[in-house]
Image 1 (tube, rainbow, N blue to C red):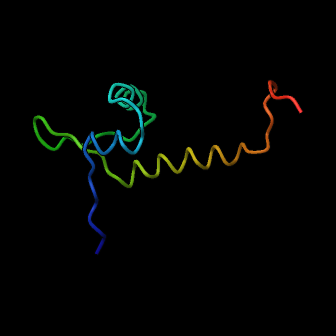
Image 2: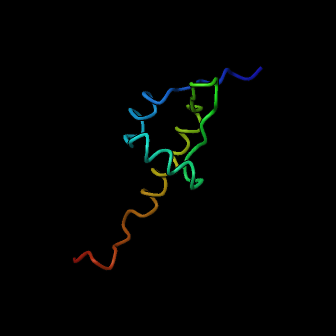
Length: 75
């Protein structure tokens, strides 16, 4: 049996991601952020697993760039 999915609300999401709700909506619309689930007429939530995975991808991307000097950096 699979474990239950944990949902987070907008308040929890903005504490995890540190983006404004408006910026999150822009990222969602651009397909660059996990999509929200509509739970009711006035209630939305996000799957915690999807948000944590989104964060992990950014960490991996950052770590893969470590040691690579951009043209603007000087020795």
